[in-house]
Length: 71
Image 1 (tube, rainbow, N blue to C red):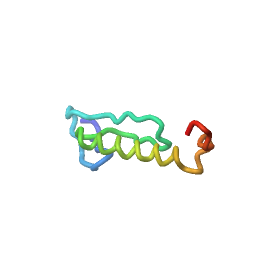
Image 2 (cartoon, helix red, strand yellow):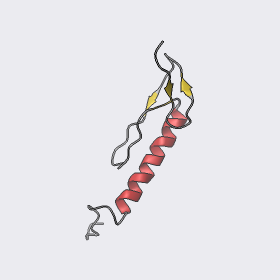
Image 3 (cartoon, one colour):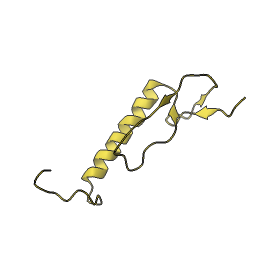
Image 4 (cartoon, rainbow, N blue to C red):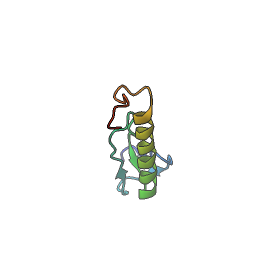
């Protein structure tokens, strides 16, 4: 028996052979790592990731956000 996986959102154990959802995101400066135990948990992590990406893009610490005429 292999090691049990844990859901990255709720922390529940995922048994061997149980369905898992991988959270794929982009533009997030700190993307989530791991798998989710349900579509609800996966959607929650995707939403958090999108918000983090939006906050990072609008942050003054973002070196690519210079406030040009196309913003």
